[in-house]
Image (tube, rainbow, N blue to C red):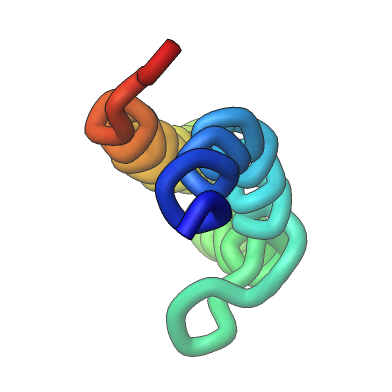
Length: 88
């Protein structure tokens, strides 16, 4: 009873920002949906750059993709942190 009502909400509230940072780091390092990683996207951007001689556009697209994905994950965790009530 004490664990569920006192310790667990406090532990979640304290550990959630660290967990959010780890999720963002894992997003950058591991496969996302259907094995799309940062290296895969940069490899595709490099191939497009070789084929079309467009230098900045593919890299900007990859950057926008990852910044938006990171932003969505961060906002999701921020809303989750705000949903947890703070009791003192």
